[in-house]
Image (cartoon, rainbow, N blue to C red; front, side):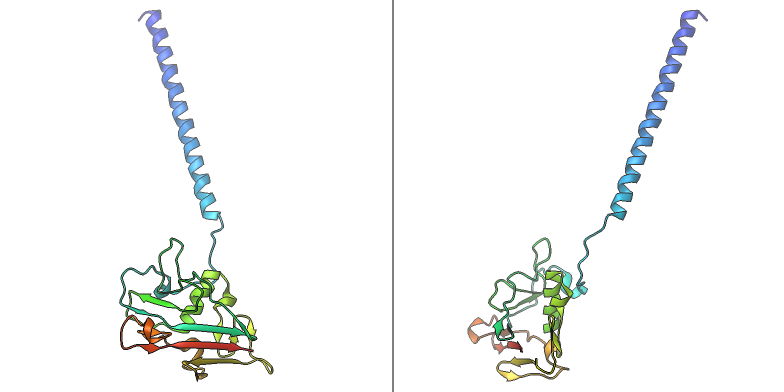
Length: 201
């Protein structure tokens, strides 16, 4: 074998060795970068909502088994407490089973499940939307951060009639399937009026 061929083989061997080294170096860098990214994603704090929802409230509604439009008025210490205009929408804008379209107090129950929903479900959705556990509180002794005491009382009426039984009223109030604040707003007849008024003061 001539010196020229030997030199060529040596050069070729060096080139192959350097290519292998570059490939190994590149592969090592890629693996380290992937490990860093995976670790960062795993350790990165996720934003979690302080008011988790059960599955029957947290999903997007597709189709409708029934519509219902109960009306809710809340008064705190003599002042009307308006409902926010948009709770009940999931992050991507789809509607949850109970939601509002405006601040009038009309709740929209549009559900793809044949189930009952309660006033407590609405407060839970509201608290989830606000990411505030206090907003989700409603029972016979408290609404939001307002508690019943020797001076302050919490009352609830349905269609003008007192409804203060802690077992069937307050958070346990079941919205009728074909409710409306007035007969003209019923989707399906016969209409069931469901005007809920909560008063704290």
